[in-house]
Image 1 (cartoon, rainbow, N blue to C red):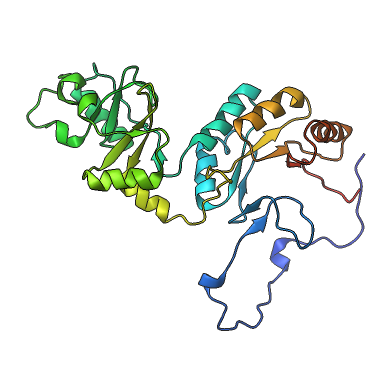
Image 2: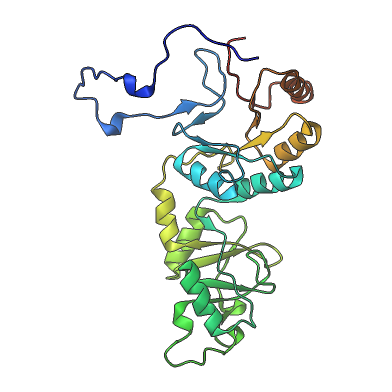
Length: 296
């Protein structure tokens, strides 16, 4: 049943912010946008604070792993969308947590049997000239070599020649192991006059690439939102139906905070969801209720 609320209604255009006095201390360098994300007691430090007051909506068209990484880089937090399987959402959360700041997952990966023409087409599409060559052509496949723009000459070489004939093979590459720090990777790059350092695991599978230019970019993002283990922080959306399965998977993947994705939080279903989380995890897990639109 619809309700009528008494009183005069207003629009945003009817309000004006009246400026006050500005002292000499009122300069951009003194602005602090750090914002508590979760409830905390007066005088205590919030367990989770954002470095910029910005989060992304729990929507499929908005909050995937790329948004999670992008917002954490700037100091905010993304909430990975929940209208997917629990396993798929947990994989997205894990992708954000596993992304090392300054370590790039390649979107321009080759196989040995691709042609120079395909290399040039991919370079045109992505704008990237450094392309790892893996056994299966995936970003985390076994590393076989690498191709840069110095390895082929479009004006002279046969566009149908295979990548295997002009790539720099794995045995000639300097690589870092999966536990290398960004600072150490940068030292290896500078000591060996490299533009990029592939990082591999114990099975020689590609983990990511550190680029000389991206290290400088990382250092220019002092507001990165990192957890105690220097990993990007990320939230995740849950619902009031499959939380008994979804919540454990998300927490195992590393989700830092949960939020119930609902249009109305004043419901028995949200109460049950939060009670289950509290019974299973106590106050350790931070969870926000979905939209609550009235005082009751």
